[in-house]
Image (cartoon, rainbow, N blue to C red; front, side, top):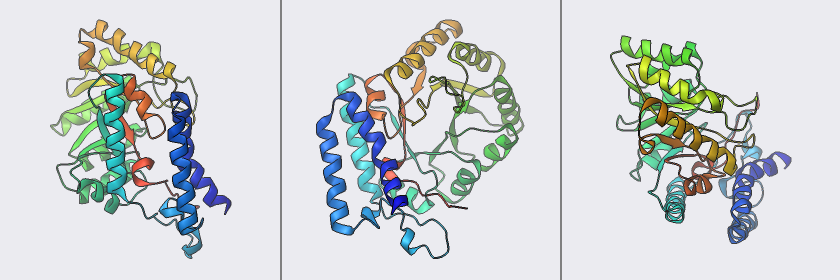
Length: 298
């Protein structure tokens, strides 16, 4: 039961944090009411598919929750549209993150017409891309080790964007590999806006220089903008978003680009609405669409 409660907290706490920061107390009430109805109707062991079905896992392997992916995606798209209206801008790209989820769930979202999907692990994205339709626009959003770059580029020909370039060394390797594979790659520079050692990303003061390096020294890479994760709990504060905006402004001046041509990838399940209101052009939403992630306890 403790594991089930923990999974429920993982699902709902980021949304509660974001709602409190935005003063959306009515949102909190609706979410708590939804959880209450779910628990009452189906029992805490399953919690409407949002909790791991540990009582049925005889083999010790994590079980995939039962989630209405299409409805979850529709709800997130509605919230994206509403946040964009509040912020006075255009709705950003929505990257649906299927981390640890089976391809079948990704295909449920695909079958609604959605085409932008993200993954965190090289092996997982390669496996899914090999079986999924070619018109999916894959985004890699996890930390990429240099020794896995070739496997990623070879295994995912339709990789649209790599969002986590944080060193010139990685950029140079990607550029060389793209040349060997006769392809180009759009990248974002990941910035550590929270100062947390546990987070990957270049320091904010060094981000414009890394962007300039990609533009001037990596002809097979296309610099698309900046990305941040935010705080240790995977939510962000206004200062995190403002930091990324400053990186964009400085980079635009340094490399001679218009600020509007430099994307800001910021906002995840717990804070994507606040990020959109502050100018995000790319949000990465996973558990709010696909349900809480379930990991094998091995």
